[in-house]
Image (tube, rainbow, N blue to C red):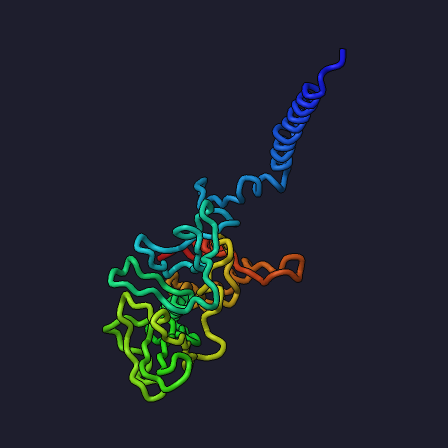
Length: 293
């Protein structure tokens, strides 16, 4: 007896569902579990966790912060790069900051909780803080001495042309002192919270300043990675932290530099990416070699 065509089609679809359920829902996941148990792969399958005295302290694949309860850097540890994943290195909220080169104007509000910093101001603030922490020059181009973006809103009589009628330092809220007193002969004002000077007709004008072309604080120290989970910093960022870490631990700076070199990995396959220093592994090695005083 020949089955109706509609029933044959439904039975064929049911067989396909059963076959693919077995293949992709059972056999394939089981094969991955078995592969993850193979010697050399089991640690990676479990998340490349690092343990000390039987206690899990983190993963070699996911970064973490080395700060105190108030969010301040712990001086005896090497510091990681910034993270935009949740509150920092949150694997459930991995994401970039979605801020680009044109993010140079802050949103200033009378309520600090409603204020938001542009990418430029975030970079400037981080560079200033790292400079103070590690005793290096924290200046960067287009940053003010107080660590915000050096950006003016320039108003002209005829919109884009004509004489300048007003100049506002948009990232410095009153009563702060503007980073420049005058601009082309016109006094510079501090910004008033709640004003959108760009919408009011101001021309955004970043000011480079006299910072060195190659800042002492490297780029990875002031910008978050795309994932927000990167466990590595550049050797350049590690180098500027050596003196502080050695001083806090009473160690020879040369010995700390050797530990940095031992935990520096080269480019993937010899040509992709840049060398990196795994911060967690380095700090664990420091605790073992030079326990905190």
